[in-house]
Length: 627
Image (cartoon, rainbow, N blue to C red; front, side):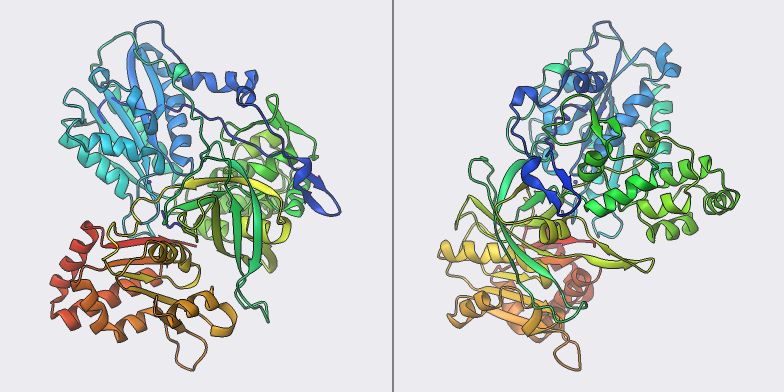
């Protein structure tokens, strides 16, 4: 999938309970999952030591003070991380004389907030996929958009909007939040700041600016009504409390004759007993394990041992290990991203190396700072993984704990569910392309797909959860035509859509545009789709780009089918696009505009307005992602 998201209010960070697998590394055979999985009662999900580590974010202030609400909305945890850092800044000794009482809160818990008693809203919200709010904050957005939305004229706000500039609706969630807070009467504390990926210098600037502006406000003192320690933790399965699902089916969807051929898998996960429910269009989140040889190499590069004990990270999913320490090997296997290098890790390494040549090289890379404007550093890091920089600056004198603190959390991977719950609500199918690549002349692997393909067997279990995608849904009426455009693994949600429409006995036309390189090698679900087409249950249009001299793509077929597509649009068809956001989605968008101009007789401006109307009416929906 996914492509999948305030005067006086500061977001509360509550509930870090996360659920952990205990995997044992076998030096000969890799990972034996069965040795590590344990069933943990709910009352044991957080140990006393871990509770103490989290307690400062769940403080109940007993004395009067000036409350600040730090509110976040997160899909992957980055907004949460920033909210914690903002809390820590606001809680520093330098601000003690201001009598601030910061609280950090997940927007999913908004029902506990009495906005009439809040004064300052410091908001950190991410956007997911093609302009979609994070799943957890959908309820909050519905609330502030409803007739029951609170009056915020007594508050001040500031918004940090997180996004990815590769997506057309960059930072849409944060922008929408700012607009709505303003319409409810709240006054801006400072200008909204939009963040492209993890731009920490800009983030730190926003935080410092927010606190400086906050210091200029004459906040009233009161006794805090919020008690974060008693907010009910979620009981169902979610991103922080995933379900251990058994993989029951795994097979290849492609034929590989060379290393250049596509490698794509079909897998099925058993959700029985989880109480997880999904809708066609949703995604399955999967927590992988890192590759054991990569972990061992990294331990060696850290000049450490596998059994070295380090603190359990606050962000790990539940159930957490017993106690407040975990072995370095387990931590690197389960919790940390070994692929993406943070600029702060580079800064730490360069600041501690004793080798003269390493010091000179590092200082040259850092001379233009840590912002994304430092093209030299950004280019260097784009060609490196964590092991590469540790090896390049191996004379570092930092401790293991210091270095680990500069690693990113290992994120779950999200895959559009390739099955309809109408067929079997206890089964979630996943269609995924296996990632293998070369970096610095060394073969590398992706994280989750190679975990599933190389180190995870049918009958074993891994942590999963459902990620909602409410902006990618079939029309409520079965009488409405559906135009689905999904090359490659973009076929996944459309397999679910097609199943659902068939089981719902929809009478209207279903049109699928699918593209791949070769008909005989990577035509995903070929037999299944061709059978439906032969039975007149599906209009199937295929583009095989490498099977002829001139490459043919799905956008070429769209142009060929202009008359049919315009007729369907005028009949009320819903259009869906799934797949690559960088090239395919834009090319398809332009082809659709061409259909409107050619067959509808619209000008360029009129065609764009027509497309905007389709999008506002939920008749043009996209689930796109950047790889």
